Image (cartoon, rainbow, N blue to C red; front, side, top):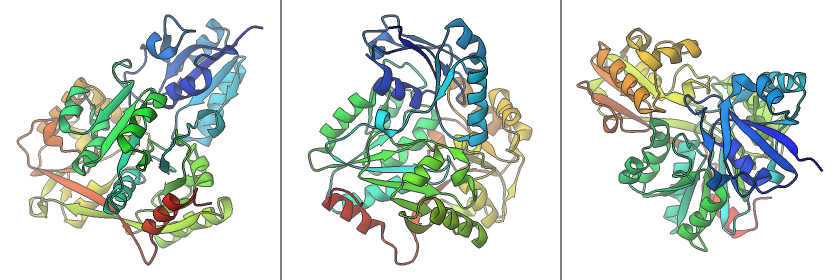
Length: 445
């Protein structure tokens, strides 16, 4: 019987996990190639044979997704599997139509084939879009667990943009670990705040191996937190699934893949950023919860913004830097840095005017980004372009809405004012009680 020939379309994350869980060492399928999109400079790599298994002695080549029609014909592919996130439903069906028009089936893999089971309790934090507030929710859950004396370990959604063999299973406990793994700005944005809180973080490529190491680190009674990326679904079967919705993007909870899947699956839906949203937009999200996930517990929350050294930006001319992915494939035009600037009555300069190299290309690819500077740093060259852009900017100070300390990765003579944001639960609702109930029982439901 001929093996089914598969192309996995991804963005250096879910694609490798789907391969590992569904296709590696599976005699019924042959993955002929991966394709790459969304993240710069991740194509033209090879998934190494050391990770690919016995059936792939030469590894598996990665190509640009734009070459999909030619790849289907070249490899006589039977199936295209979509394996990345934060896509509008319409965009997903365009990709399906392209695959079908060129002779291949189009698949989406679900939890049964891709979720791994842990011996520890797992709390999953996901979202309906990139930039909803997953990281601050993860930090708050870690804080609550640590207060009870429980050991907690975070497993982060993959960001393997370098040497895949070296990144198979990564452990982060100190800033030195970030340096030794040559972490990008995007990785540092997720890891630094957790390291600052004394939390061990695992990430990488092979989430089976990562689970084994994370369970060892957590201990028998420890809790694992799945910190999802973009709006992807969990890699591990959760005992409690918390999904974050964003009323600044009302309706997106049912317009994007796989965010809508998270929205429908979740035990708890936190509506974040209510302090910055309109009442009618908050009600739109709640109406969709009642329509699509009636079992979900709704928690209202604010994203509490804390400004370091506010006197440096009050009534001053400022350059605002925000989290890169939130602005790019997250589709947001601004973030916490912009809000802090407005509250401080600062004058926001046009960052695009000073952009250079790869940063200028980002504005061309994502025209909805106007005044704000996305903190792009997927490579050393891109970090250098970010540094040059900040150096060129004529302003009194830089507002950094990205979670990392920019002074650790770039050099500038301008003062950088960091913006931190924490999850603040509103009213009498208690995230702590939900977590306690989950840990004491076999699950919330």
